[in-house]
Image 1 (cartoon, rainbow, N blue to C red):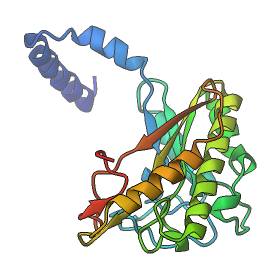
Image 2: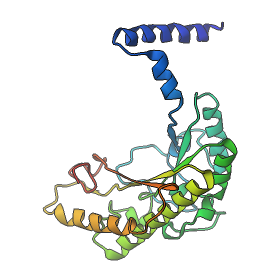
Image 3: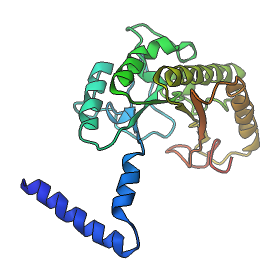
Amino acid sequence: MPQSSKQIESAFRLAHDRYESLGVNVEKACAALAKMPVSLHCWQGDDVQGFETAAGGLGGGLAVTGNHPGRARTPDELRADLAAALAVIPGRHRLNLHAFYGEFGGKPVDRDAIEPAHFAGWIGWAKERRMGLDFNPTCFAHAKAADGFTLSHPDARIRKFWIEHCRRARDIGAAMGKALGTPCVTNVWVPDGFKDTPADRAAARARLADALDEVFKKPLPSKHLLDAVEPKLFGIGSESCTVGSAEF
């Protein structure tokens, strides 16, 4: 047995005995874990850059460098990197894809115009690997998110833009779930927030509630799509009030 394998085995035995002393059946737990798919984040492969022709700065309190050496530059490179990672991760897993990772053929396609066709390559790749896809609208890295607000924006025109983006994200998620035979969890994550303590928190939250009602108005079959809303605790630059926080 190679030295590295011996070290892994030794470490596992130590952990096994410790958990067993606490009443955990390690073999049973590992067997259950092997059946539980984990949805891997696409953005770990390219430092949250996406594949649009003209993305804005990340914003929204996202703290990544954006200059990771060797990051994937194309969908094919990202898929190759994901395949390499999946080859050494036990179990069968899923991929969580953001909307700005579509394949747009080098053409500018704004967020309120994305369609399932822009993700056909990802669906085909997942089908070949017999794995599911999950999906997120991308409510950041865009000129209409540069001031830190999207679905709760005071400008009705900008809110309408992001509502349409999230609606289309749900349609794309449903198309993924239908094509792959496993429901796509489509997670709406809203980065909106204030750096300074606002005099009025209620108005922004009322706008967000109304916007989310519009996003989720269209019924879609749960066998294809599972809706989710992710609360944000805080973001760098929006510490004083996160509109879509857990308390909201």
